[in-house]
Image (tube, rainbow, N blue to C red; front, side, top):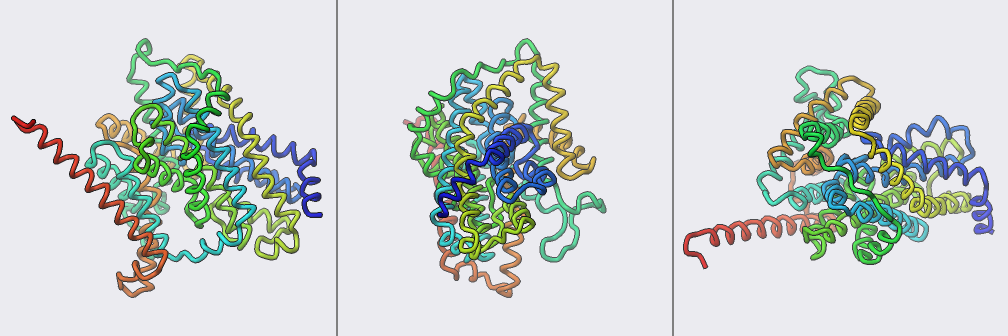
Length: 502
């Protein structure tokens, strides 16, 4: 009875139209640097508020999934991540495109994103209640170690120079301290400016570091010597072969993304960084600096991106606790439409909740053909002369920075961080650790202070809880292995460089 009702709902022509329209909308928003999946979801609310419950939720689910993937398109073709989650593997994706492997790079993104989304949708449908109960057992201790583990990714994904990677990381952590103290509420490092009370926004910083700095870098290159964008070529066949070749990486990224997505407040950004770090240092294939190694890292992180979306809906639907900001919007819409998330939803309205789960499958299946079409369209636009494209990209950057905070100061921040990003990149300092520090700094500080207040300054509390202690040991082991391997490598190089060394 329930399955027949679900099938009937899915065959509704209006629902199919809403899914298709939301998919195109999400692809366009996600492909514009600075316009995120969260923004795509928020902008939909005034339109879907007048729809029936299922089409309203379907619109947000589809648009957010498409926007997360679409951020990979400018990341690969322009070296400008469309969403924060795409920043982890921007260099790998862009490098493949410039080496004539655009189809492989973008095909890996679209296929891995679709599979990651389907994997999390399957987990969402089969194991939502049990997995959500595990997520709810996390306290500030577990979140502290999880954040610290994510921050350790900065040492894993950085360049060969550990000093430059740590310098970038500490710069990002310093940026994260600007604004209101998370426990006392006292302003710090704001220099009396009201606009800095909320700290440096992630989107303006991201736009400045990656988009505006890239425009500045291109402006310094003479037009006649500027490398042209290679043709994309056939995508479907290459991507299917790549998907099978990197099936282990896709599975690994899907699992990591789903688990991280279940944790309230983690989100696709952290999932992408953790999975990228695991791919780069945790597998022989991902450690390679050739094209196949880059594809492995892209595949793992792309799968984690979209898998985290499905994971975030597990605590949202089972307990009414949002896993991220997007699922918080969905919960609000569900309440307005008379759908009360929680355990009773599975008993009182099973057809409704399982129709929503089925929409996850539908959206991720539609991602493959629509994503390939979007890649084609975006690539065709970029073949226009730079004199037309560069001002258009700059306009989108300004609109993206302004629309997030609705202040001119956000545009000024994007410009300032654009100059800083250009300067850091010109001196070989990686930008990725700084972004990671800005993302995870507030989480680590808040959970640390909260834990210390509850434990009255007893540091042993960080090792008392079972899950927390395991996360602590894994994080410490990562530090020991990474720093130990770096030190041993440096000693070997120094010994080999000595005169008379064999």
